[in-house]
Amino acid sequence: MSIAAEATVRAMREDRGRFALLSGRRVLIYWPHGLGDWVHFGAIAPLLEPSNTYAITRFGDDYVSVMEEHPRILALCSGVRAPSDGADLGARHFGLSLRACNGGSVRMELPSPIGRNVSAFAPEILLWTDYPETEGRTAYPFHTKARNLARLLVPSSRLRSFDLSKPLVNTVDFAAPPATQQRLDERLARFAPPGTRLCVVSRAGVTAGRKNWGNSSEALDFAIRMRRDDQRWHFISMDDEHLGDGAAGFRELFADLDQPFARLYKALAARADLFVGIPAGPLHLVMARGSIPTIGLWLAHHPDWYDEPNPAAIHLIGRRVRDHGFDRRPATTTKPASLRHRLHYLDKPTIDSQAVLEAVRALIG
Image (cartoon, rainbow, N blue to C red; front, side, top):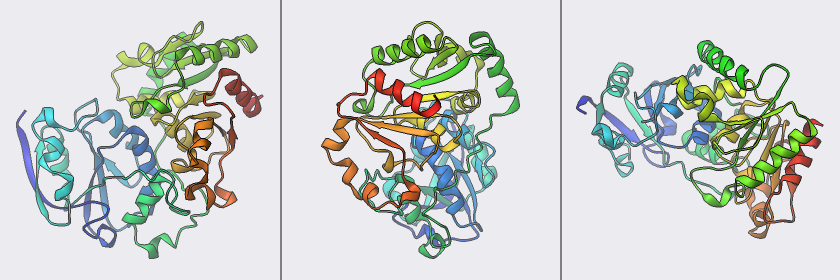
């Protein structure tokens, strides 16, 4: 595919280029990160310098749609549905390297159709962050991955104006467009008619197999036990796995609606009565959204590294997390009580269906 346009900008990353000192500029945020990272950016956005004008994009509108209708950040669609680096359009990462983002001028290659959207925004600055994983090694108030990045992007004088002892407010618009919500509701009504209760299960992620919840048999056993208690429960597997009677896969139900994933998932979240899942994009979105009873399943990471606390959530933590001392890292030991999660540490390396069922009962009865 041909290059639609080129643009000269100053390119920066979080640790070079003195981004935090910018004001009154037009900033394009290139965010080639995962779905959960897009959600967490919603908590960073209100901390940024307000005199700048911001847009955000990546190759992959499944994730860009997280930021649609944001009050401060313009989401620029790429015209590419599935996340990629843009190489198939002829300009991998806009023809740039992260190493080159050191505060100097660079020439961006803008393939069509994203090139038209970027050119219309007319950025002066490109911000491309490495978004380093902290893995609990940074202390409060910068103990999560997002808070640590904010420390690098926002002047300390401005950060001091926020009460960081309180959960950061996530400014993502979690409401799906009305037309999307209507189409999903119509499809959902045939699967889970009025009067049923809907549980979303997310057992596996794409970044690290060690954080996945066993195999599908554990999730299946959980669904069977839940329906044994209350036949009204229906289940949607984000992994399109078989969870028995009254269950279906997300793609099986909604893929032919031809909408970006995050847009559809926002619509589904609006109808969910319960979420059970590992630390991946679907969990991070419901945690940030709030109001959905949530059971987090942590087998290789710790919630203190990623999410702001949510009173509607209980987190089950497998023994491996404590065996590796993850709960003794600064992210956990330096936090005030106002930022504590509801944690249940388990004595087993796995999280069995009975433990999840008991957590659900503690949360919603």
